[in-house]
Image 1 (cartoon, one colour):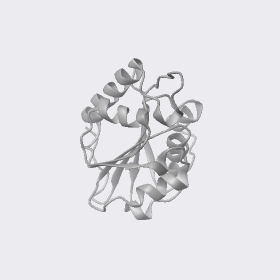
Image 2 (cartoon, one colour):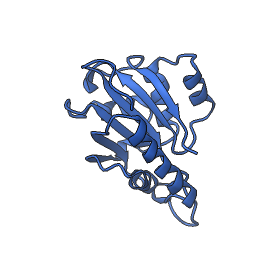
Image 3 (cartoon, one colour):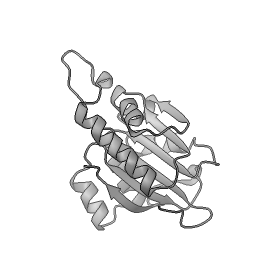
Image 4 (tube, rainbow, N blue to C red):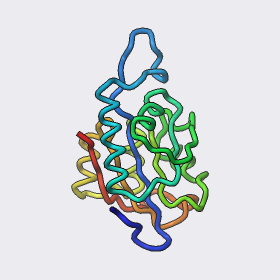
Length: 170
């Protein structure tokens, strides 16, 4: 299991929702997960429990597919649902993260493309490492970017975190 690097560091996990269905006449915000998306999200949840510190809190977009992803992943930490995460880019995602209670050591954010991959790369300073290259190539559904945050949630800014893992559950 991963551990925090220092007594003051935190773990930030950015997750893209699972594969969604496209039912006729359903608005984008209301699209549910496809069966494949539920399976992917369940695998992501298994990986989180096996490989990362326990999730203390969750920020989740209000879309149906992100809510379904969180449920399928089996993460039961206290959750804040945020409309601002729907279609968010790094500045909006960071503003939501900054509202997280200081006692939270591991935060899971469940959102969308391009918000999750662009935020991961922004926080890590766009390095040319293997995980960052993989994120730039494709951040598939149910993928997870794990970052070590050496500061408080309110101090989190561009290039202030380290990308430690990029995982695609399949």
